Image 1 (cartoon, rainbow, N blue to C red):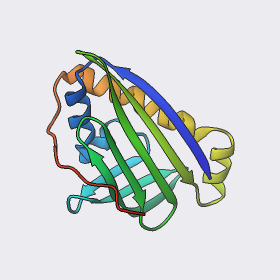
Image 2: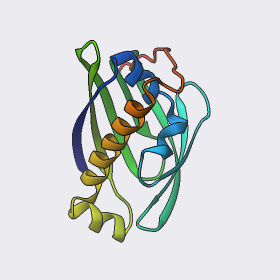
Image 3: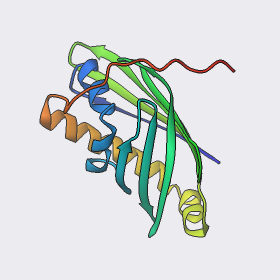
Image 4: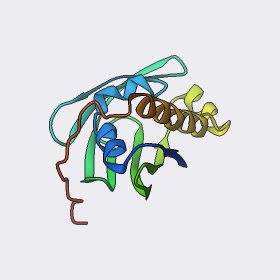
Amino acid sequence: MSTITESVNVTVPIRTAYDQWTQFETFPQFMDGVEEIRQLDDTTLRWRTRMAGVVREFDARITEQLPDERVAWKSLEGPTHAGVVTFHRLDETTTRVTAQMEIDPEGLAEKAGDRLGALGHRVKGDLQRFKAFIEARGVQTGGWRGKVDRPDP
């Protein structure tokens, strides 16, 4: 199991950064290896990824969502994948986006890539592409301001 933490500062207000992040179906536009995400309901996402030539499909559940603060999730099947993305207001026009993920890759190629740090580089690249995506647009493509409370332990 690998834990990856990466951050990027984006030059947009916190609401813009957060609202764009909740548009999960746009992830393939800036996330390497993500081919499709379909939002099945308020808390369930269907992912299709391609890593090291291997296509995987799995469902993930949003376990916590607080507008302008955080989005947390965990996979429901397939490879173990869980994480949280947090949003920190640095000033009126700048937001720090931090992704912290725990990933347990499956398969020989994915495990080898993980040992070589490929997953960390991928997350860092994804955040840089998110920065370019949202800063070039200047506005979000939509937003969901709903709240998902973390379940009691």
